[in-house]
Image (cartoon, rainbow over all chains, first blue to last red; front, side, top):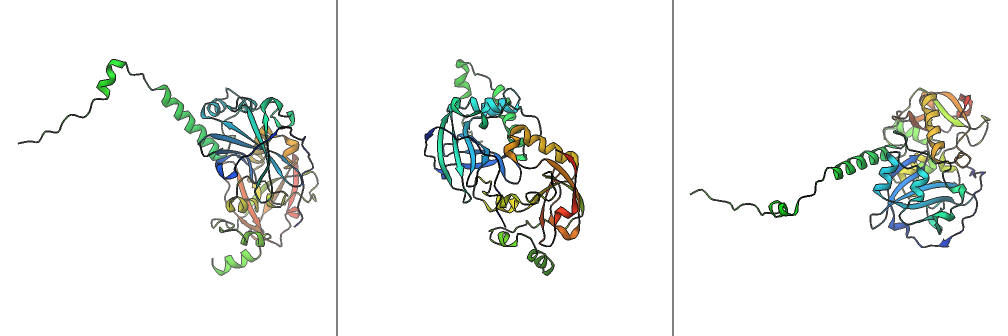
Length: 178
Length: 148
């Protein structure tokens, strides 16, 4: 079977070489998928959330953008308050990583790029806003989970200080019937 | 695996790659199915990319080592209706640059018959996967019906 190569070539990325341990990242699921991953949700060893977005490929590598995110940003994205461009631009790290992945699934040529230095060809322009049902089942479940997560936060009431001791009072002693 | 299944397995177009995986590929719930099917293709039905699974589109588009993904990538993506096929294309085009995606420009319709391979049932987005047998040339059974 002959191997096919994408016709599109992407501009080179200018950034600072970086070291990321591939084994430190674990995929939780796919947001967009077609005959392979296109937009995936990862976590690192510190349980920090990352999005890995496919950017294209050349004859040797697939190019991926990896950027940190968090529940708040993902929730805003799923609610349509921010688009996919802002999801990248508001990354808590203020930078993204570009990773080349070869046929053996080895992460190579990792480059750290400040958000403002990412070439337009790698950014979602114009930005897109999430609509219900856009994502794979994992992504839709994540949206539901985040809705629930943040709705519960809204229902937490602050306990007045003078009542805190009542809340924390130990259980009453057990009495044995004589 | 009974004899009938074993015979079928021998005839898969990508048998060699499937046998290298650590999991059963195709998964056990795949079966011969007769159905109308739609697939994203390029303008010419003879385009060599039209019925080539992702697995062979060098380099493989994976971001994790997992045989389940490799098995999925050995199948061909089809849709059960034109509406589903067009809608899913629009979703991917919305989030990813079309010129980079390179997944097709036209919609082709065909009739998948029992002897074409093994497939699963369409999911909620109308997508299903076909693992074709070696002797089937799918391009002969599909025709372009619209642009994407």
